[in-house]
Image 1 (tube, rainbow, N blue to C red):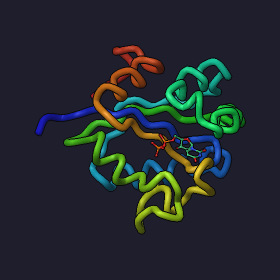
Image 2 (cartoon, rainbow, N blue to C red):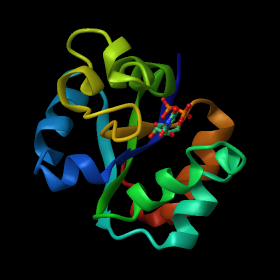
Image 3 (cartoon, rainbow, N blue to C red):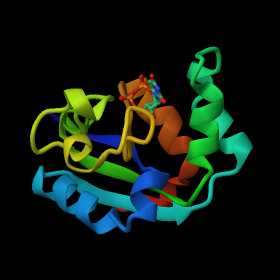
Image 4 (cartoon, helix red, strand yellow):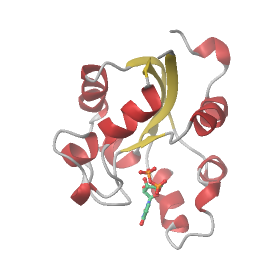
Length: 140
Ligand code: UDP
């Protein structure tokens, strides 16, 4: 299996509680490498573009408001099978259903304020990484 890259966001509920380092510790313990990272304040337009696939869902407005409520940390993670691996490390969307030891089980507050995002396919990873990082900002 070749090295793969995925896109991650440490969400506002986590940055507000000073959990960036704790979440990175779980990521690194799982064998994923942080090969790009920056802390930014998303604009409303950036958040709407990022979650455009959910624009018709009833929670969209709340989700966008949440994503711009505090800074986020955007990241590129690299490793064997990184996309599926990170989804496993994140845990289920709703922390009540997340497995023990996953980031969402450990830290998420609710199904909406669930601490992290991770790409769900190679196509999504490519689009999401390109939304936030120039090629020369990713150092593997
Ligand atoms: N979300 C929400 N309410 C829901 C489902 C999802 O607020 O009922 C939010 C939540 O922050 C989630 C994001 O929308 O992480 C994207 O949803 P998706 O189903 O893609 O889950 P994920 O891929 O993040 O596990």
